[in-house]
Image (cartoon, one colour):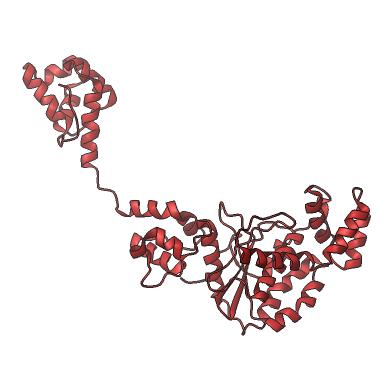
Length: 378
C-alpha cells in the first residue's frame, strides 16, 4: 500500500492493522517478522508509540512498501496532532522583517509582550497617532509615516533619540545663547576631559543632548531632530571613540540646529567621515550638509590654514610639526591628526594622538546603550 498523506487523519497503527488483516497476520506474527517485542508492536498499533525511522524501514520490508510511506504517515499524524502555532508568530516575523524588533527588545526599548501590546509599543515608539497605528495601516504605510528615506535601523535609532530626549527638562531654546557660546565650546578642544561640559552647555541654550549607542547594521554618527519647532535635540552614537570625530560630529549637528535644519520630520541622519564625498541628490539637503561640514571643518582652526600647513610640510609631516600647529591653534593634536589622516587617506598615520573620548562624555550625558538603558516610558 503506497499512499498520499494530505488527507490522512489517523495514526500509522490504523494502517498497520489493515495490512495485518489483509494478510491474516496477528500482532504477534508481525513482532516475529520484524524482530521486535510484541509489546513494542502493540504500542505502535495502539498509537501509544510512534513509528521510528528504523521501524519504518522494517515495516517497508515486511509489507513490501517504501519506508518513506510509514515515515510519512507518522509525520502527517504528528503534524495534525501538534498544537496550532501562536498567530503572533506570523505577526512577529512580519515585524522583524521590516524593523529590528528583537534587538530593540534586547536593548530595553520595547518590552517583550503579547502581539497586541507589542504593536501598541511600536505605535508609540514610532509616534504613530490613533488613526495610523500599525494594526490598521500595515508596515508599508508605517514605514512611509516614519520617514521612508532612512533604513529601519536608522529609524529605530532616531526614534529612540527622540524618546530619550523627551525625558529631559530643558529651558526654552535660544539660538543667541547657542551661537554666542561657541567660543566657550571652542575652548574645550584642548583637554579631552573638557568634553564633559558639553551636555550642560547645550542644555543651557535649550538643546537636549543624548547619546544612544548605534544598533546593528546602522552606520550613523549623529542627528539633529526637533520635538517641536522650539525643542531641538542633538543625538550622537559615539561609534568612533575618537576626540577628533566627536568634535567634528558635534559641531556639524550644532550647525544644523542653528540653521533650523531637520524640522517637521526632515531630519538627516548623519554618517560623517570628514573630507569624504557623500552622494546627496537633493539640492536642499546638499546645501544643509555643505554648511554643516564647513562649520565643522573650520571650528578648531581655519581649514585654509590647515591646507596651507599640509602643503608646506607634506609629505614629511613630523610629530613636532603637528604638536606645534595644534599648540598655536589651541586644540588637542588629535583634532589636527584626524583631519590630516583624511587628507592623506592614511588612517594609520600618527594614530597614537587619537585619544578616546567616550569615558568623559558618557559620565555627564543622558545615555542609552553602552551597558545602560535610559529610564524613559513609551
